[in-house]
Amino acid sequence: MSSDSVEILLVEDNASHAEMTIRALRKHGISNHIQVARDGAEAVEFLFSNGPKPGGVPRLVLLDLKLPKIDGIEVLRRIKGDPRTQKIPVVMLTSSHEDHDLQACYELGVNSYIVKPVDFQQFTDAVRSLGLYWMLLNRFPT
Image (cartoon, rainbow, N blue to C red; front, side):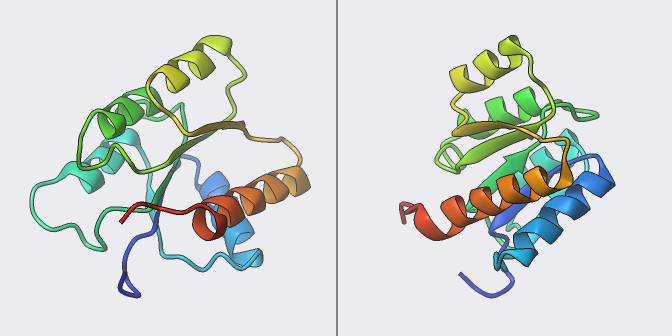
């Protein structure tokens, strides 16, 4: 991948949560290029717009569940339902403890479902673990 390739798509409507996630990844040495989408429609546009995408298809999607315009479940449905994107690992990073949300995400093929910790240090630790696993340890098909 080129140095400007998007490797992580972070879909998060809360600017402070997006900033904390990026800061936590950077703090722990995850320097991959991150593209932020502020709502579900922006994420869908980034992933499925016609023509070449700036930075290409991401290696990982960190997806919030409760999003404006198009919710995270619908974004997940589209990612996992399209042959061009279905192999991209998707991690739901959400505040929802609801069993029906968890069930729906796994039925659609989510790779991981993580409830955002309220405590900043716990949140940082969770994001660090995510970044280390998905960007450094996990093997991706070519």
